[in-house]
Length: 233
Image (cartoon, rainbow, N blue to C red; front, side, top):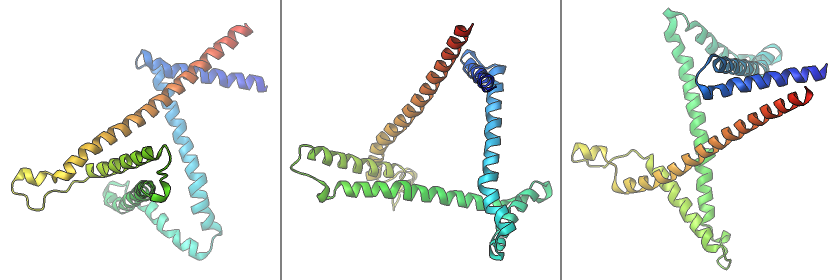
């Protein structure tokens, strides 16, 4: 029974792999079926994950067995949920602006906090540590390489931050001056473009290599399946 069950899922995975790879020949019904199936399974998994990891432990369990303070705090998310449900009625669409504004502000706060404490602060600390004299061994053979790495990191960080600086001159004389940034930021932004391009290239190379490895793995699965099938005939 277990062997037949395993064979069944091997055949299913083989057929789905062939359907996905059929897109190489052009858009067709088999690829669309596999894509819709994948999206449906992913959506179902996300819904079950939200129910199990968020709604049950943080909403239903405190509401049924929590203290009165916990139940009182639950009134806020319940109210926001009800507002979203009511906003689906055409006459009360304006009610949904409150929970949507709360979600947008919360998402922006999480994004800004992640960027500051997850990227900017660690990057600044890494630069400071790179120029710390206690971390430099001037007698070693790699001392100059360490200094060059620190300088490149400093220039790259300043150039990247300057690229996202959108200020302008304090006393613009013409309309062109109003749109033009100070010369120092213009020069540093050009350097930042180089580092941003290198970073995006590295990210694209990582994504492409991951997709290529996944493709190779699927081709090996198909080849192994055909080999096993021909061997059992």
